[in-house]
Image (cartoon, rainbow, N blue to C red; front, side, top):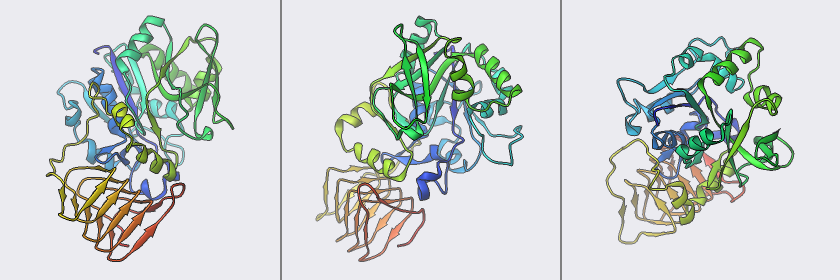
Length: 370
């Protein structure tokens, strides 16, 4: 899709995810056995033929850069265009903190926006798991003559206090936008937008001159009747991650084949960094049921209703139930884990018992020895 340019916001780190985002940006949070959250929206762009993508970062993005690299896994390593990492080199921040909002982030990369070759731009966030038909969304944008197309979901994916909701007029236009209300109403906005490059530049210039940093409050709400804002309603699976418990429940959703079939649609594949791991080894007495297990694992104990990332080791006599074990986790003999999330390279020693709850899973920090 040669007339659409991708902008991906990856500057936010959600402190509510606790130990899971302490060493990394939210967009580089591992999910689903072998992926990072940024893989989903980045793949959505590439699946629609978007090969010019700007990734806006700010703080704690070393893990993100290590994962993405040159963008080769997404066919974005190119002589002309391709993936561009956009750090805040020219940004005069407020006290050195992260961007206050997406308009401030766009203002910080204004010179990049001016040099975009395409006539249209899609803005999206890299901190959710969703498989969007971006080419269909863009075609609807053109067919309806919308000034801005906003991608929405019919299901409510997060707590209302973290979300935005749109309601529609009889002619299908957005006529109200509720930001972080007490209760959800209408359609939940996924905060992904398509608009023309010209309109985007005009908006950024206006917001920069008037110290407006929020796209929703500063641009959409005041212009609901001046701009033609049309929703695209996505009816597939969406996972958003406002808390540790939501990360756990959304991870457990992947044990449902219907969710996997929707999120990992082979017609729109989700790409990720290739690590060329060997096949997983199951010992003669190993037991594994209703699990999602990545390559490179070594399982001799018992595992059920769990997600194991690459290179996880579960020794003989160890039991893992209803847990998410990230890459390199080692569960020693006789240990027992239930409703636990281990970050990368965690070691659980012999005979240890770790237990959380479905509504309050126990999260173990990266590189911990328990």
